[in-house]
Amino acid sequence: VGFKSHPNFPKINFDWSGDSVILPDKVPASLLCFIVEVVIGYGSGTLYEAADMGLISVSVIDMVPSALDGHAQRTKNHLLNNTKSNKIHFPKNLNEFNNIL
Image (tube, rainbow, N blue to C red):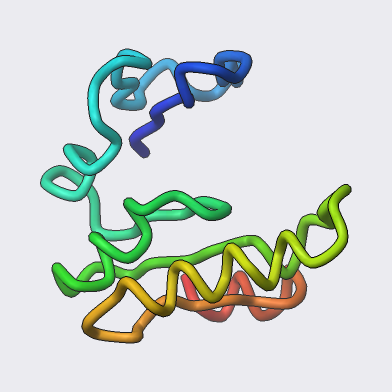
């Protein structure tokens, strides 16, 4: 498992992440694409980069409510408009999420 926190957000700390690859905040998340097979995120450009590299790319945007009206759809459109492969998964619940993985 590889993690990379956004530079402007709190760091990710899980008890079970001790054996994981954790990239520093300032390192581009796209570097994870060279050491993982699955990329999971919300609206990061790394999702379309991963999809275009043939990796499994999963956005949880439909599973996590947005506080801003229309934000999720705008972000989803941005991801889909920037991928050449159009292979980003958008599960709506944990069952769909688990089936993708």
